[in-house]
Length: 195
Image 1 (cartoon, rainbow, N blue to C red):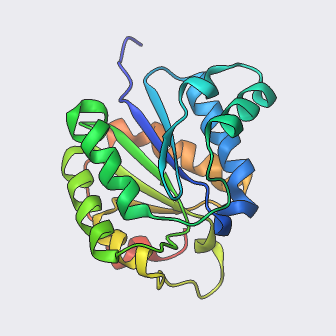
Image 2: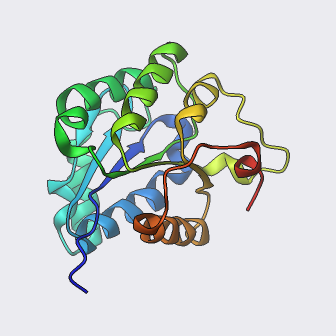
């Protein structure tokens, strides 16, 4: 009671490889934006698009339609590093991500330079309270973060969780809800094991 929630910033990968998961993840983002104060939402693809305002509608269908009109690069490629650089330059380091919980919903497939992604993730992690990466492929038996983007980003992620289903999204909500009680920690090999 009276405790102020940390700002939540959600970055949703809307590339072609994420299409099977995008609608469910967008519903999760909508629920976060419409149900909680201090939430910002962005789509990341070939460019970065802020979509917080479009997702404020209480009606999910209206919100999703508005977000669809706002985001012009659905199911395209992914330039995670470039989008994170733009986020860091325009919003992140100027205050939006400072002390926030940042959730990246992505499979880690990236067409850009992995070093740019690593540099931008390191930059982002330095200013956030917690950086959570949600990957729908993590549930796959034998999954290893071998995609160049995922491998580059992982050293700068505090929590690496599944994101393939509604139950996984519910689990993510629990990680976010518990975040004010957690201390920042590095990803260790044990955190890479299935939960």
